[in-house]
Image (tube, rainbow, N blue to C red; front, side, top):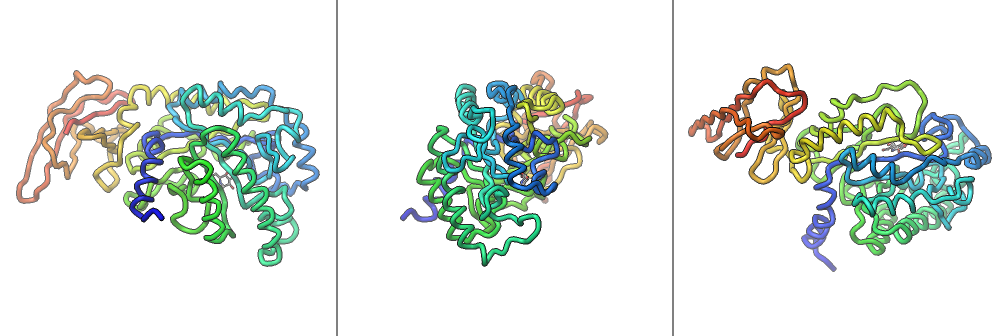
Length: 411
Ligand code: FHN
């Protein structure tokens, strides 16, 4: 039996690609995309199962192009894709033999988009990962949900629930891990009602099938399950709040699944700041797109992702493979990431007098500071050392800042 140190070491090595990746694409896509009201439409509109099955018979996303989606993620600077293999509506977006309510057997599309995505991801060096709703399944009579008119009684339904969970949930997770090549991670969602024993059974099954497949914390509602913590939706923790690796799942607007409602969209500048803010605190950003019923990622999404990718193409050195800021507090002018002996200062508060930045706590002598996009622009670096307080104060004189560049400091 491996001791706890071995388990920690094993988990750290399994996690390395994910920690270096920093930025992933979340994809919420399913039958619900037909209605353009988000992924909870079946529940919100109390659509009976038989009626929803008829909707599935209309789902035929002929414009779906796995290569185009993977190229979109790659151009955005995203290193992994997490796609809904089965959301709460119970409809599997792949050819499942566990339940005929799937895109190959229950819709006219007849193709397996996850199979096509796994090939496109492998060609482009992007990790393919699957989202799975393992407790809630509105299509299955015994999964956790209320039946729109009477609340589900856990004690009464417990035996039936575990017949569902052991057959469909574990059966489909097994399919995803044995028929789609190496899986980067399984992103479980809503796991209320599972005991620690059941949670461990799911984790052990995954480890047995693909030991390198990461698991997020929502595999269980008990603490410390999974390889890393999925924060709440759009939640960014305070400095030092998290004790293990974590990731923020984030929407571009107010919906996960495709919505035609008029929404407020995050600007590209806001997305870049959130990405940097999350990374400077040691987390990953999983940014969502909700493709249409025909299989197209909305233009409002692709435009923003392209612009984030252009920024990352210039400043990726300050993002990928970095670690969290050594300064455990919010900085009024921006954020800091670290790589080896280099501090990257992400200065995004334009209105702060940026002619000088003061950074306490720098322990090493700063040799030079320069704009990441123009190393020749070395600036005057004033280093003052107050022995009595044993901390260095570094002042960097900055030029008039171009719109989205960084100062990189060799410390
Ligand atoms: O209910 C789901 C929701 O539809 C969406 O998938 C999000 C993504 O994090 N997870 C649950 C709500 O937190």
